[in-house]
Image (tube, rainbow, N blue to C red; front, top):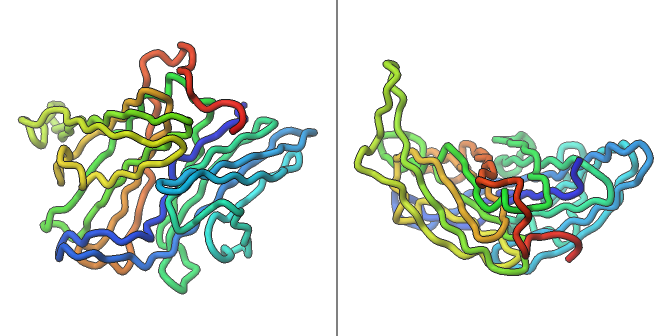
Length: 287
């Protein structure tokens, strides 16, 4: 059982973005909800839980609470109340910024995130996703991450656009030097053969540095090495342990008042030697 959990990013897209049709800056009016859910499975012990919120351009912030034995606890990490009337946005959590999260507990707990968006002035969810946080402590295993379904869809042949972000959380006290690799994809033919979408395309790489105790959301369409309308698998290799997650947001082409849907693209740590000792500077203990 685990006493440490990581969420790379609680996605919200309140920031303006570029309209691929007109080239102008636009802004979606979606309202974003997010919940952190924690269950204490101990029959006897109270869980003393400490949260650290990480941002792209703000210093980290802390919050702590207690969870009785064999109880589930909910935090609504958004402005206002949810459909159950829960309105307990903790101090230090800024729901207007994308943020990552580190949870530490004095006893083993299970931590899960639920996130969703809705139209303005409505309580009906437009799209929703839920995912388990990644268990810690982080070590060598978490220096290489992979997710398989990577795609930026911009073609005017389709009514939908798919915008994709790859986010890296560096909870350490030193910078993380990362290399992003994009492995080109193709279709498996019904005869059992493989046909690459772009046979001449090789693996593409791009280097980034994630500052200490920050998240770095990367809009993949901003990277010159990522071709639109080309399927990839994505990998992130780091010199220190990090966590990684993908987000895809879907719009009706040219209409950005609200998104049609979005999805969490879950990444998996895939370093070659998970049994080896942890790398120095990994997060452990208290801040």
